[in-house]
Length: 150
Image 1 (cartoon, rainbow, N blue to C red):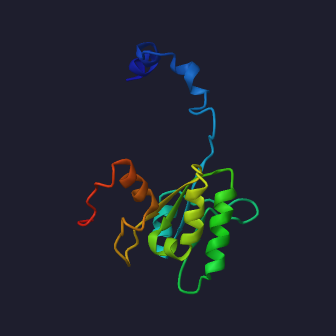
Image 2 (cartoon, rainbow, N blue to C red):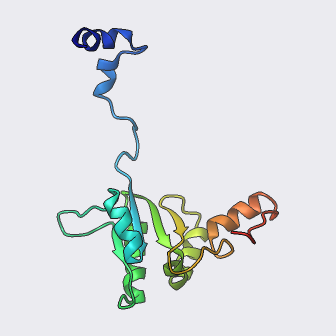
């Protein structure tokens, strides 16, 4: 086994030792995923390793419940939108309905990063007609996508 491990770098098709010190991506290496949603959704993503807290106590997630004010959700979304290290914002569709005006403005301005993806919650079924990404896909395919059985 030891002989195999010693010979392994010579068997590989590229210089493995030289590649080990390089970064995979040259730009936007530290892009994060932000999550806005109900407790179960956010907890799942945090347990999967998405959640982070910086030195000032700021997080890249927001748990929205019945006590959360709409202004808090709007402020957190705008914070994520303006952050240079957020690449994707995942938001429960039920929460997205509360701040639909901000999502529409985000889409209308043509902002690509961060990308906003609406995800279903366990309380309400997914509605592809309310999802702006699905609306773009429909336009791309000429509006001929049947979403009635989703």
